[in-house]
Length: 96
Image (cartoon, rainbow, N blue to C red; front, side, top):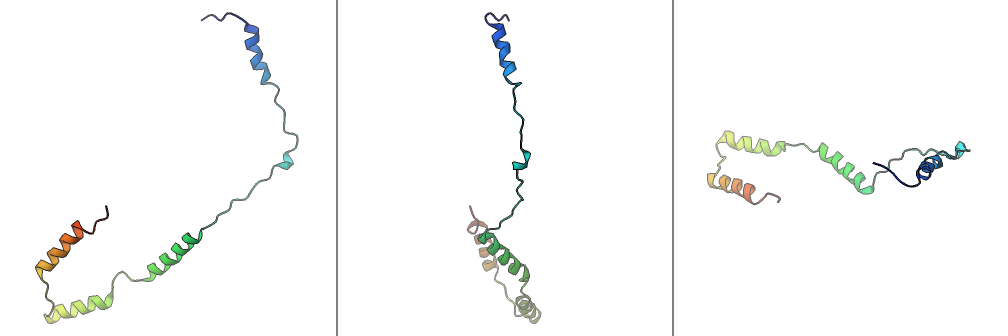
């Protein structure tokens, strides 16, 4: 490709970049320390999670009550009730 016209004018563009001024005073630059701030909502969540971790996953008294009724033969489970609860949990309790 041939360029016709003011070729010396094009080369003057590159000369403008040579006049870069230096920073004279570097003492004006201040470094900031990193800060971490936790919102009140996040603090509330931390407290709630702490107390939830202390709650046992298994309710021992409920398990012992059912175990006693099974051993004594008094524990009676209706199959239709179980099937009904399973179907309800599968179809109605899902979050869409």
